[in-house]
Image 1 (cartoon, one colour):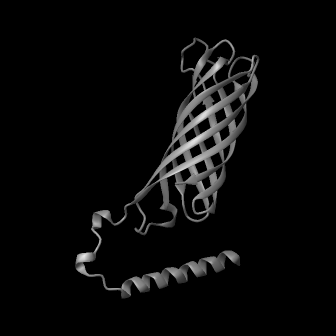
Image 2 (cartoon, rainbow, N blue to C red):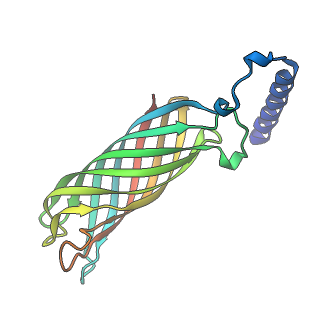
Image 3 (tube, rainbow, N blue to C red):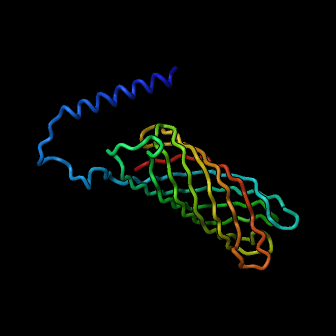
Length: 207
């Protein structure tokens, strides 16, 4: 019942806005240039996340492991479609996401390191609950070989799904799931790699 009430109110508001717009006469000289009608200032997002996940080393023993991360995120979100009606399922924004990563890996000996991720993300902006899809890759440098006996430099392709909730227009909290792969891309003969299921929680601000 609550959802149907919201839908009814939204429909009434849309009808009133359309009627009001049709009743206002805009002089020819003041009309917006068609090519600029949908442009909107870009948005910069700054965020912080914590993540943890169970993983498995793809060696003969399928050794279990885990990865913990602290992530600082900066995302550039060009917005092109404001003011142009689109189907509800298409309303969203694309972002180029750059993340600085501090990671800890549970192994013997334990390892920690610093990394950088570059991701592309699409966020549906239908309401305050905003689902998202993202994918990309990164690089991670560690103080110990990961997995043991391999290298201290690994690549980290990853893909995931997330959900944000807008607490305020410029403040969001949310969580993500990522499938995270770590390997040295053939720098060693064995290169077993690690596959991890990561869960992330964080907060972000739009500037």
